[in-house]
Image (cartoon, rainbow, N blue to C red; front, side, top):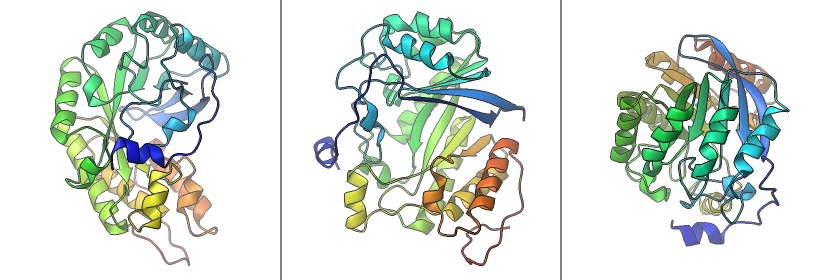
Length: 312
């Protein structure tokens, strides 16, 4: 599952403007003190990530070359002018924020200035780039920096097949480094990456949450894996991949919540695709939303669809 094979199965990219963000939206998220915070999230238009991960579809809205200096601050300013006030800013750039081939270093001061009104600024990064550039950017911010790292899975055979170029040891070193420099961390965890069946998907997502918290991560975000990037569609045809169910997402979220070791959040984007029952989907989505925001148990749902992996 190398880069050339993964790229060979892709479709066409969507046209993008390097001076306009790919998207922006407001959402809500709890903080570690239990308060619900308003969040501004911006999907920055940026150069394609060089790692070509097996499960990634972010390449669809990326540029072929590094964006020019000044483009990223212009995108952020454009989005903030259209977003409601918030205390938490998320900047997603379809790769690693601290990769100098992605975000120009000379843009750091401008980005920091635009972020000055936020208590927390979240960016994403591969473990390979959580070094000097990360510290320099952190020093420029008035608020707290949080770095999100894709842990994905701790499954010893599946992680190498994702073409991520990362090890569990490298993840732990990065978290240790960030924590030693007063930078908080978040882990992205995949629910049902390729090569796992539904039961294995739940087990290994829970194990991945365990590992992330043992490293000192403060937030775990559980992301159901979606088809549509070419490579996963091929693997699905060959019987190596299937999208997870909403019931599995409920189970993993409830497990993580029960640990009481940090925030555990379920990614609810395009959630309906993981449901097989139109009668209980709305209630399940509402329940997941409530658990996300309150970080408190909510009674599991029962439905005539008869499918539930949640354990009381």
